[in-house]
Length: 500
Image (cartoon, rainbow, N blue to C red; front, side, top):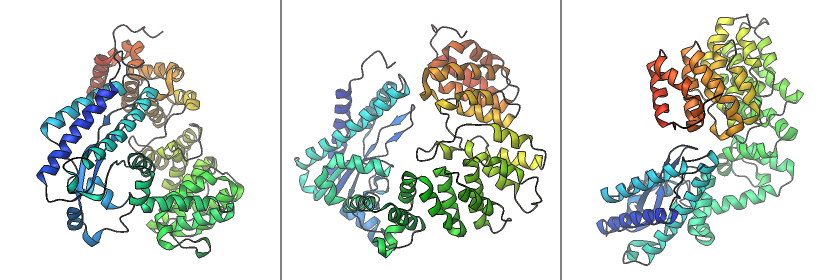
């Protein structure tokens, strides 16, 4: 539940405007000879259910842009991804004074208190409302500047917008800040890209697939109106488009790329994301996995072929290769494939869902052929910090089971992914008792540490398990764990019901 005192959004918005308006005027007064083509709010930082850092006001002038980049800037300065519109690279990326900085820090603290005062859904609602506030502040700043005594220092095409690292989000926010007409005029490149996307969407399916496969390789296709420069700029967009198309036709169109060393990893990566476990796809991937170790530039692609097999449920076959007479086949490649379903790649929204199943990992850890090498390889692939998959609601029972696995590596992985507060009360009823038991009964320090971190992520929801946390704070052999437990105890309310 959100905080008991309602957050005053109107006062918050006014505070931001007043601070940045003061900073903008101070900057213009200090640089009377500069012709300013843009102010921007850049550097907005957000961690879901965690901290939010407000953006900074940035500015740049035509003279500074010419002096700092001159002819070195690539491409046409008509799209958001051009350096002309990168606030972090500008001459003045962070404006402010001690007075305004203090006011903004106070506003940021109040915002974070509000954002983290309730559920993850409340945090997301706060984030959405914040974006609306920042858009309105940008529009208000632009209007105030263009009707002020500073207007003569602004270029004819002066703009003020909210800049974020997410290309799709930034384009949408910039359009909201500027309006459709100004956006299309200043950012012609972005407008043209949108027009091109509509043109491609209208093509027959086979032509659309051909287009995106060409972009994936960065090669032109005159018959589809695709030049090399545009193809090379659309590689990442092509991956997303192919995923949305999905199915056998997209998967089969990727297979010829497996035979090309420079494209092999991209094709295998896409096959892993598409999740099409077709016989032809499996056979092609297996053929490349069985290739002996070769040049380093080839190994990345073959590792991704193994990863795709792991994603497509072919871990049993990968494990069988250890028993075959394949001395030239690297154990690390097999481990890479078996570990893939447990890695962060599978938390992407544009990836076919892989249900959590520790069975293949446990089978690999129990396998007797090259057991030591396999254990070392899997431990390297799934080391803490390497990036784990996120726990989903349908996988909670398997995560709890994994926390009781006979294999330390499985227990470590399970403990690490169980801090997903976003899953809500139903998941908490299964996850929190398991984590509380782990921090007091688990023999292995790495598992206890990861379990404690996950328990901490549940914040006040873990209050019923205060006794277990207090036991860890007092008795754990690790000073790190004792410290985390003591800090968590300080954050917990005293009047929560104890665990059953």
